[in-house]
Length: 507
Image (cartoon, rainbow, N blue to C red; front, top):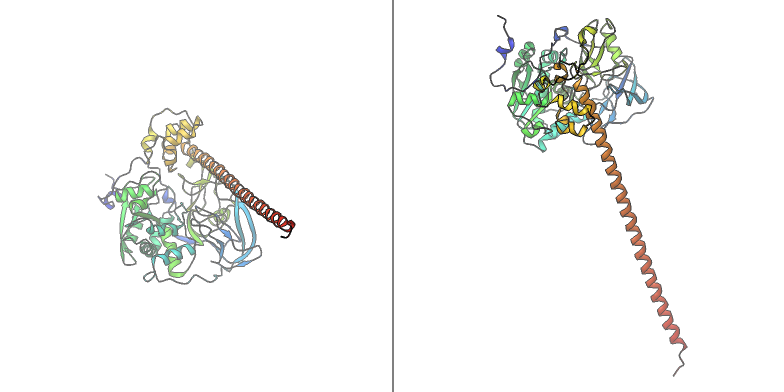
């Protein structure tokens, strides 16, 4: 009889989620690879849009010499993030470059030719979190340009400021890492658990919560043991919860459901339930920003897949080209069938290997044909397998039928916008229909249509405002003209009276 380690580690207080799948994890390729640091590449390309929200504004120009950690892109608006130079060197371009995105469209990017010295500039002043206010901690996280490093890339400071809007009580550190192949968070927990615990404590102070839970999938027993050793964050006890190995356990709302039993309503925030979730790598970044004044200029990336000659977990500078990272790992064994940024379930395929790694990149996978092979796409047989697998309780085959009929509103009506794009439906579909790809495409079209509608409404509003301004100016002119006419008429009348008085004979 085989032993299931998860059954020993998982406490009985966990709650279940519906659906999900159990893909072959293939984490063995890098699970035992200690984190190594990649040398400084000759060139880094730093996009100004590495986060959800408004892109940063460049504050350097071509030929400027920059030092590591220097601000090169300033956040704009409430949902944005600063961008810093990942190393020292000279700015050789401030323009557009291909984005690490399936669209391949160019985005504003700062290109730095590195000098190889990796010289730090002035770090931010150190902050003692034990004495700092929540506002000071959140401000420091914003200064450091930290975003959600699990892939969501939501500015972390915005989440820390949620205490002003919601009564919060629990911080969950998301260390589930449910995507196959990826082990960068697993290694971080094993090798830097103390820093993650401290970062979690700092964030808990900023949020004003009294409970920290570190959620780790059952297939990472060494990470569980490491975090149980480092079980205090800023004096607050960390509870380690071992969650079942089930994809998509790392989905924020589903993790909250498993840990707390609370179900987040569609399109609502987990903060409305009093729970905030941050990634383990984000916690480490917060530790470095607060304790040492270091902005987010590097991250750990898993490089894996059977197309890679030397799979590894590597700390790389933000902006490092994918091609350089692949070369650092010995290059490719063969031309990959798919080259992905991120995991195989939600990762983005890339065609251009010159694209840079960004703050949200947690993996680079080179998958061979043997790892991706699927049979030809067949017609939907309405078996309902996708419905059983969907963790959001949706009906993927029905959404797909409406999208195929170009009925986007109908698809939205049956839950398209509630889809988290986890890919469980595509993975399990016996007809091999690329369901999630269709959903992402349809969501993109809906977003484009909504944006166009908002633009039209804004144009109408501006036109109406202009008409109102013109009418007001015309009315003001009319009143002024009437006033002048009245004054002139009164003046003429007065002059007529005066003339008449002068013409009368003296008595």
